Length: 270
Image (cartoon, helix red, strand yellow):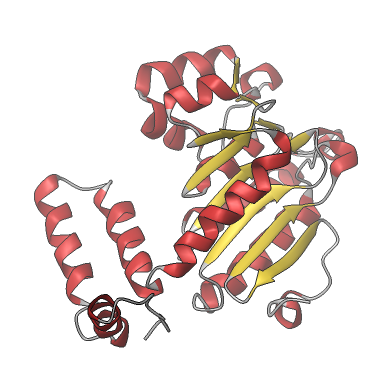
């Protein structure tokens, strides 16, 4: 049971786990088909992240991962797309666009734990998160040009921002696969883990985030995300605007008090 159950209803393609009161684990749950994204999964992701946006204080960190050991997500379910009319295809893709935006703009810190292949739309889900850890056997690719389409869930925008324009063009134009080591060296992922250590490491990072002042983390996330789209002068003004919102909070006073009392702070998000 999680606090979202009443809002999201029964879920078929996702598993939600409330690790403790501050951490939510979301698992893509179609392991028999590499956790491929079908219409139902798109609808459920939009529903879950809509609930998180509506109550951003419900959790302090979210971990997105996949069920099974073979794949995090193999992208869109192409078997479901076989025989779709253009209109049906467009309607489904618009749902997937909303899905990726819901993750990208989630106000809660997002960690992606990549437990295997992250291909096409799966790689876009990863890039929509704030940062990612991956198992040592993970592989990555944007293969859409080999299927007569192109990345359409943010891939052409997110990947160049992560690894640079020229390298992103090469990978997307060639549909080339790359390894966990390359993903780490290029900045797609933050850490390589042995498969059995992936979730413990992601959970450890989530717990550290949860020990920080939640309003501070939220304002820092907003300043970073907005500032990345701005010139430096405007970005600095955005940072200061976010900073000043923290001055009148109870958590700021608690942080100073805990430091002077030589104890761990207890932040309440107020």
